[in-house]
Length: 589
Image 1 (cartoon, helix red, strand yellow):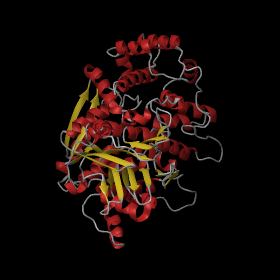
Image 2: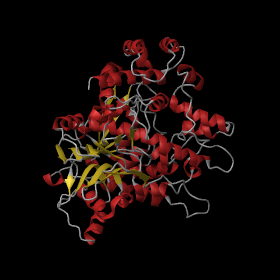
Image 3: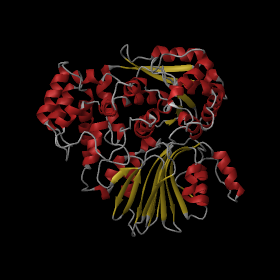
Image 4: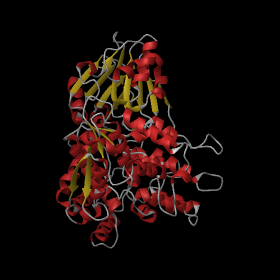
C-alpha cells in the first residue's frame, strides 16, 4: 500500500526536484517505509511505500521493466497474483520480485488496459510507456483506493491526495468548482467524478484514462456493478457456496509479509470476516488480534457486543473509548487526515481504531461492503420501500437522508442552489411498476454511498499508515452476491437485513447480535458544547463558500436553534465547520 503522484507533460518540462519532494512529503503517512522518484523530460512518478508484500529492496517503487521503457507508479494490493504470474510466465515473462507490483507492471506490458479486468484487488495506478508516449491511469473496481487528476493545457497531474493537486503550480489561479461545492453541502463530501477545483476530478471506480504526449485523452470503464439476477436465471447460490467464497476471499486478502488483524464491531460483517480469518490464520484463532472503538452513550457503544464476539471466537481483542473530552483534538486530526472537503463525524472513530490497530498490526481486515451488497441499511430501506410512500416521496426521502437537511431548509439556506441537479442520477432511483426497486436501491448504495464509506476508511487508515482490506468487496464475492435479490436478504416486517450473512455467522459462532448500533460520535452535542465557539467563529467569517450564495441570517438562526435544542441541525453545521477548518489548512500550504 502506498501513495502516488506524478505528471505527464505535453512538451518538454524542466524537472523541479523541490516541488516533487514537497508533494511526496505531503503523503508520508501513506508510505513511511520508503520513497521513490523517477523522471524524464515528459514524465514524473513518485511513490511513498508502505511495504506489505516483498518488503525487500526488490519491491521498491516506482518499478520499471528491465529495458526501462515502461514505468509503473502503483498504490494497492493484488489478491490473484499466483494465477496472473503463471499466465505471464506462460508467455515468456520472468520476475525479479515476489510482490504484486511487478505482476501489475508485466500484465499491463502484455495486455495493455485489457489487463485491468483481470485484476482482483484494490489499487490506483499510473503506467507510462515511453515507447509510444502513452500513460494509463486506473482505479480499482469499487473505488477502494482514490486517484485525483488535474488536466491542464501543459499536461496531466495525478495524485493519491487532493491537497497534492492543490500544491502543484498548475493549480494556481483555478477557481472553486461550484457544482462540486454544492455536492459537498448536499452529501458531506465531493463524489467522483468531481473535485474542489475546476479542471480537477476524482476518477470513478472501475475507470481508466489513457493520455498521450499530444494531449489526446481516452476514457472508459472496465467494471460496472451488476444489475442483479434475472428472473429464471441460474439458481440461487447455497449458503455453503456463499460462505466458501467469503472464506476464500478472506484467505486471499490475509496474504502479506507483515502482521494482519481485524476490525471488530458489534454488528454482522466484521465478526463474519474475523471468524473466517481466525479459521484460516496459520497462527491459530487464539493468536488473531481484533480492534474496536466504543462511543459514549447507550445507543452507540458496541464494546460489549464486540467483546462477546471476541470471547466466542477465543481471540485477542483490543478496544478503546471515544469521549467528549478529546473532541477538539479529534476534529483537528480529522481535518489533517481528509486532504479534501469531507464532513462525516464517523471518520473520527475510524481514525481512533486505525491508530489502535497500527500499534500491533500493519494490515487490518474490515467488513465494508456487506450492507451495500446484501441490503443491510434496514432503517432507511424499510422507509423507502413502504407501499404508502409515493415514488416522488421515496426519492426525496432517500436524498434527504444523505443530505441531513430538509429540502425546504436547504433551498432557503442556499437560495441559488437547486435541491438536486437534474443531471445527477446518484441517489435518484426509480420507484414505479415493472422496476426492481430493491435492485435500484442496491445500485445507488454501491455506486454512490459505498465510495464515500471507502474514502473515509482510506483517509483514516492511511493517516496512521495502516492498510485496510475489504474481503466482502472481493471480485468473487461481488459476483456471487449479485445472484441474490432483495427478497433473499431483507425481511422488512422483522426489520432484518443481510439475512445470508447473518445466517452464516450464526452457524459459525452460534449467535449474532441484533446489528450494528452505529459508528458516529455525538457531533450534535459537541456543537452545542466544546465545539460551539469554534463553530461560531466559522459562521462569523464564513470563508471558503466561494461561488455559492448563503443566507447568513438564516444560518445564524439555525445555529441558535441547534444550540438551544429547538431543532437538530447537526448535518449542515458540521459541514460548514469542517469546510472552514479545511480551507484554513489549505491556505497554509
